[in-house]
Length: 480
Image (cartoon, rainbow, N blue to C red; front, side, top):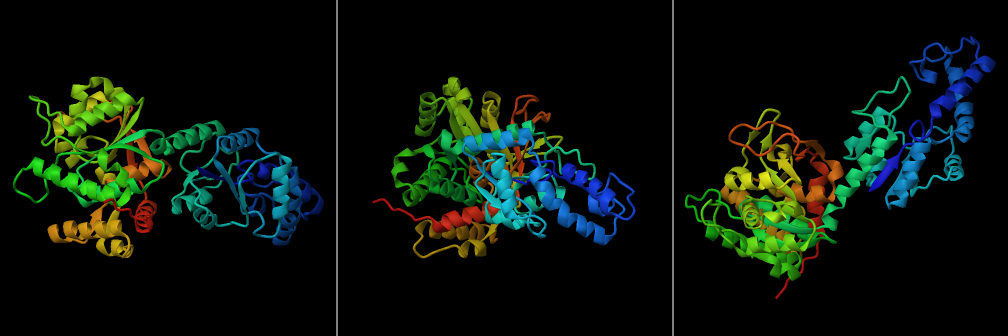
């Protein structure tokens, strides 16, 4: 991760040192010599009874003289050293130097004297949002509420350390340095999930167009170990006949088509799943179900990405209950409100399968569909990224038009399914919560204290830009 820190009043108690100098300045150089008038205000904004000329004179001398005397906070420096040791990138984003009172060279000397490691110093940033965005900072740690808000506006996660400064506005929940470290550790571990475990992606790829975009996006990523692509059964939207086998065959062919344009070596890892929703009578042992069991028994942990009904996984769990603890499940399910859980098609499309999976797998992360209804792409937006020599993007664009415009008569679609893949790459951009709701008598899926993680929401700018950029610039390969 790329983690940025502010300096003054974040990793060093700058205001404390400046107040000491201000008290000496007040006694020696102010006209009134009243001392501190109001502790609740900043030094030059009412703490002392100074004229504008005295305030300017104090700032000119005080800031430059105070910086070399600062002592960094031990826990903050310890955190930074630990992050660097563990391979993270550390940036400092500071306003120092923008007003001429401090010099960048002075800050560099201070960091070196106190043996504080870092990758880059970004100074003269009174508005930090530009530097954060240009340098693709993942997390910003800053003592000021306004700076945290600047970071969040450019889709950077912001953390405010606990402060004793009385006039500091709190930003969300401020954290101790130990809490910050534990939080960063959790985020980092989640960020590496997609590269750390073998992956099974279970998809009904022709059910809706966002399934195609999600599968294509996953297949364009490097350093991921895709063990299997299994095809889930589904009802074809807008078709009156229920023909699961036909839909599975259609999805299978489309998955192969996308694989051939991205990672053709994986064409032997695409498997047809169950050709109907789960039945409590005879079990359907498809190639996809057998492969799920085989992969889970081969590895200690497997990431299972469920983009459709959970039929295949439910069959696998009935046949091989021992694999339940091997699976880290990520699935788009229903809408969660504080009072109840309401159905979304991946859940209600095969509800018995959903009940089996949710009751047996403990390590699960779910994505309420309505939490990502703002992730909308239009036909015109996609067309801007289509290139003649990009076979993958041309395929996705043609299918997008066919599904949304020709079948539904609209020019846009929410990219629900893609968000599961993006979460596994960049979880720090999401808001999350532990599921502790009591469900109604229909949806007996989650119990309080089971630890189900709920991914609630994300701003739409970053993920959609990343999706289109990656697909546009991907160099397709075609197998014979």
